[in-house]
Image (tube, rainbow, N blue to C red; front, side, top):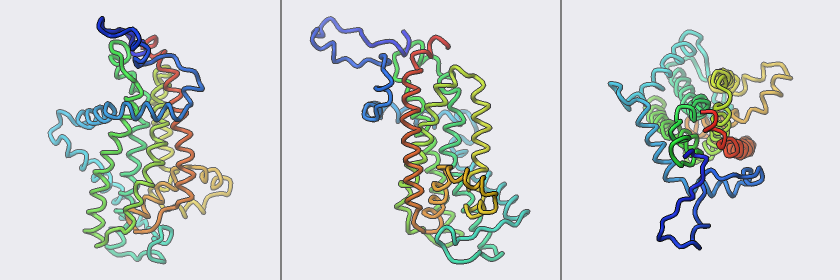
Length: 316
């Protein structure tokens, strides 16, 4: 029986009157039902335990069989941090002004402390972007690589993309912990606005969750989608102020500035640096815009996935 089938089997001892209360996994839904946020939230709450179990499985499976195992969770971002710091801070001698982040006024001087600030600020962007990039990049093959959950068992397939986002968030939290330790060790400071970090991550999770569900549903029918998504994620990485502060965008032509101003990731990363590194308040207006876009993306992604999953078994 496919995952799109209906849980209709009943025990002989089950009263007939209780049968209508059985939960129907993969039952047909209309677009109005699929786009209903209340229905979406109810399903996520109902499947929260299953989502967490699959997130744990995803984390354990990423480095299973490797010599260093879970240590790669720390080593991978640290290696990327070393590479980017060497290229940008040492070779290109890039500098980071704290003014835009609400830190000390004026640019930093060319000292060892400045290079440490640049490294930590860059590391912040890389760690936070992992939540988005890992989830969305792997989404097009997520259902394709789990055909057993589609064909052989009755399973709420929405769990797969949501668990992937949750796993990426947990791994990113490890990197954020390393970031806080590095900030204390190298800059001798602890951000006073760490409490606002969840406000920064909520819009990011909404965007990542919505796009992951959308890409995982379409990826079953469009096998070239993974290449397209990978390229778009890389382009978005460089178009978002991660390797550079947002004020650098002022050097671009006016039409390009206007286009990039709609990027919902920009205020997220500016606010992440402000709250995690510089102890400044986040951009609440920008985060509200990012959250609104994220909510729309999440509802649309959920609706498309819910409608498309009934055809997964026919394609796989």
